[in-house]
Image 1 (cartoon, helix red, strand yellow):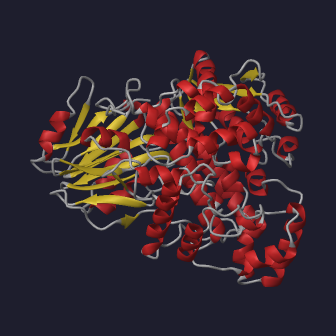
Image 2 (image 1 turned 180 degrees about the vertical axis):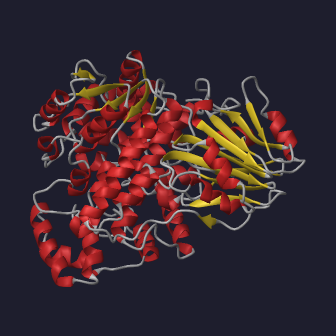
Image 3 (image 1 turned 60 degrees about the vertical axis):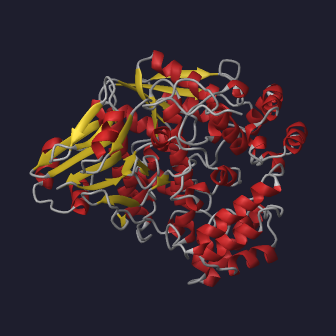
Length: 610
């Protein structure tokens, strides 16, 4: 996708920046003064705009917005923040951009699928929906400190780098905040436009909210008519989206690729779902018909705003989108984000322990048996109720320690990160500094509850990923309806004890989709593993992976020790290879800036000399 937009303040100095962006096919939307406000290239079908007096509003993305309604709602808008009232109760995933008397309001989504970034060009404040657009305009260099943080596993960049990007001097607006400019471009105080809900609803009440939100989210995907496609892995999330899409779409194409793991029963569940969707076109791909994970990774060049761990299955996703595109699909739906939204993280038990300790201990005792965790380690994990700031400082000091045991490692604010075995001491110092810097201002967590914070953190990691994939993949765009803000709000409104029921898998989603998805499909109680696909791809493409360690740009930057990485690739030790995908994503990204292919931005990427 080559869409991009740049936003300018209502000042005479902005005209020179707008002139630099002049190209054939580039659109311009003015402030009420007539000066340039929005400049860029985007699909007109993704825009709904309105104006009234000195107020201008543009909704860019997938939404239920209607121009007439927007116009009526902004007639009485006098302050930039009031523009947010114009989009109240809209479904979808979209940017909100407003100019009110030359003062500006801009925000993306709480899930980070859409972001707002800022920098200065010749002294003029500039904002954009893509960090690489601003990097190209300002000739910014990659930020080694941000790259070091991206090497950590589990990932923490979405929280630790909430206001940073992977480019020097290009900043990010945290997803829950809006960018506010005065008329001359002076930045106003950050305004929080979104807050997570209080988990207060019963399962029945929350299920009704989720049903409405998820139905509306899918409807924004099918509203344009024509053909849409969707993953049909056999898992509950993708299956639910397929049945919702089948009710709304003119034509639905589903895709299932069969995993190699003999313990993976996804294929059987997907087959049952296909039987219940006779009107859809179904594509089923065997392991031999679809590229392996890691296929072609050695030659990938993917100019984008940040590194992406999904370089692992870039070839597979490219093949998938090519196939559905041949069947006429204009948008592809994926169930990503469903696990985070509909399976409360174990740290909800730590929240519970503060108010109902005996109930919490009974539940913890059941969980620890399932995870084979020791009683003492679980007790220590639950009783260690640290602030989020303390968690960041502890994580900074634990980067080179062995990872905590599986269950106890999930009882904090989020899974504690570790540096990969091939990270250099210099990289570890950068990681430590980033975590301590994040802790320095006593930051608030994303939510008061640990499990809600953890869910939002992981949703934002996924939001960053899908944004980058849509910048680099060819074919129809991908959509994750489970991460639409309205769905996130509805799913996190449930009391966690009601969303966790012994013997029931994702009870909230099951209750929400009852009557839409057949009951026998909602009865699934597990999820298929893909370890065999990971190791099969690793064995077949080890040569390509090893080639990436030769003349490595990460090594040139002093971030990795290639000899230690090569040893890990040969040994195939699971614990050692957990961080591999982040390292590969960073290496491919740096190589893409080193004379890669054409960039989907106004200017080609800066060519680096090595």
